[in-house]
Length: 390
Ligand SMILES: Nc1nc2c(ncn2[C@@H]2O[C@H](COP(=O)(O)OP(=O)(O)OP(=O)(O)O)[C@@H](O)[C@H]2O)c(=O)[nH]1
Ligand SMILES: [Mg+2]
Image (tube, rainbow, N blue to C red):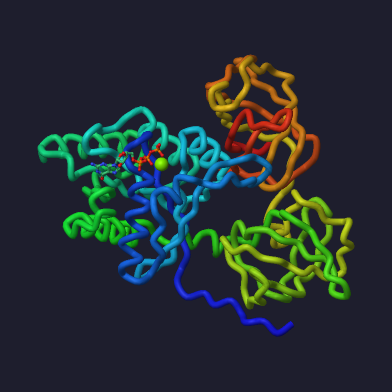
């Protein structure tokens, strides 16, 4: 195989815009790509190309998510802009969005609205520790004192949710005017990007943690062996490393490593990779298994969780669920049936957030903070986070 090796130039982070409907998330996303394209470190992605987000099948649930990528002087970013409120709930709670930091977009004209508060709550629940605030539409806000009030209100909201509201960067911007090329407002986008660069730290914890890769696909390369593919959830991996395949219950050695068809010395958290495994039969490994550093994860069947049941309007159920409910649980890439126990509550309605205990049909690696989707009859009816493993 004569292929050029993959070159990692800048550290990579995943960020995204969140905030109430119509506060300008997509306009701001387009403006960021425009400003960086003019700096020469990105490609301009116009509004209508972001908003026409492709439907992507990720982790077995249909989610709507638009990715743009760009670079600042110091970092490479993948930026997600989610088109609707239900998409936030699904992508955040299942961890599909995988945000290292978020830009909370608040219209300076309207102030905080219900979904502003809900997205902050979701971000807190899924462990997004760093939020930068974009007070958008500042071009239309004639009265500075009113914008000062909105800023105070946002800082209070963040403080109430456990963020350092007093020290969070709040930048007054206009996505719309920056898109039109108005220099005052393109400067505001530069200021916002500087705030993101400096305030959102590198998520080194993922790279330094023990290696883990949820298996998305399995293939055979004739004469070389079995290859598993997927995104590295955490840690690093090199050729020669020992790994356990949980689900297949084998321990083996990595004999090859590639990304997008290029061989690599080391895979890191966030990379999409193909891993060649020594002496593992093709039919021993399946989607849903987990490749991990030996001894670093413990598979389990019982766990407690906090689950948001999607409302009927969001595509969820129209009738309540009760103890004894047996849906499918999508955990990382695994699809496993589970028995639900709602404890004292006994019954839960669509649109509610509930605590539950789940007994899975088979063991999978579990840990507090892990997100999952609840599915039934081919559609997503809930999104949850593991709170404790029993
Ligand atoms: N005056 C002004 N209007 C803006 C600004 N940014 C966005 N808008 C307008 O606000 C409206 C909503 O903008 P979007 O970018 O679609 O908002 P969004 O938050 O992505 O909306 P959803 O994806 O539907 O939640 C559009 O009419 C924009 O032109 C701004 O900085 N100033
Ligand atoms: Mg939008």
